[in-house]
Image (cartoon, rainbow, N blue to C red):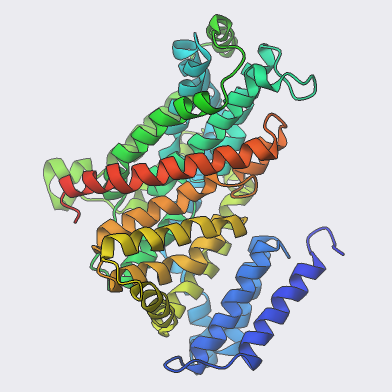
Length: 488
């Protein structure tokens, strides 16, 4: 049964699990009653998110309400509501919300399409070249597109489909293998990699930064520049490999595509010269990247450092003042406001689970079970990351997965002796790379899978292959790169 916004059965299951943990499951030794009750609310919320019982924003409002009413974080009603709303004061949440609004300019001005067709006009002579053009286009817009779904599914995928159609490759005619099957797989498997490369490339990344900071007592606070530099080499290696690996496993029937360059150039000609709005967007993107990377502080000293979220507000302010975005555009960007609401609720619950000691308790359980094998920290981390990564087969949301598991697995890895920043960067990368696995792993996957170019069997086979490749690169190449950088 379901109403337009409510699925009754998943909702009842989440309520049942919440009540089961709250009233029936025994509170373990070393865990307070309040921590256990907050866990019940948290697990119920995650189950509801996984089952899509309601829109995630609505579930977030319910979670905030229940935390405030039950008083699991505070003995006073005033303290409880203050705690329940505390997530809205987190600057990283506003960074993502504002960045989503800024990325609206990509679609409004047409700059996203122009970037895609430009790279195809350069590299589109061969099918594999089109694959690299799609990959580079994703990479260019990733730092300022916090919705990986909007980036891979809303901007790059329509370009990919138009190219495939121009070569007579369509699922309806049974000609997917001409070129569309290959391009769809490349289109999708680049998306998790670009998501792993920047804090601002997918919504849950700032949550990871917060969880790592909390677990280390703020000793490790990953900046935008630190994340981008750490992910640069493993990310570029993975991006270089994707078109090649897909080509080796599922080669397209059409391998030479001289018409693609012509098609892309014709689309660029139709678009004409860059508009005023596009030029402003380019200038704002350049400004954001310079400030996010901390270049003024590098050149002129720490007095010129600018807060990452303040930079996002600056970018939006420029777009509003120049008229590229209107206030109506800001109000209509529902995904941004939706993200701010659900993100605030999940960050709040995760923060208090940590403060109440629940995360530490669970991490001790995980650590002791792995420790029984007697491996050193390096092998233990491989086991830990593999479990964390492949459990994503059971999740349809990276946000739910990260919220449910990241903090405990990170704490367990620290207890097993792993270098804190190395472990944090590895788990952070895995948190995006796990999107590769299934056709429901993240919001981008059903869009591209739904276009019909790739069968479920091919999707899962390619997903598993790319998961092994990406994890190996992030662990080995990334690990060596971080050693060179002095991160561990």
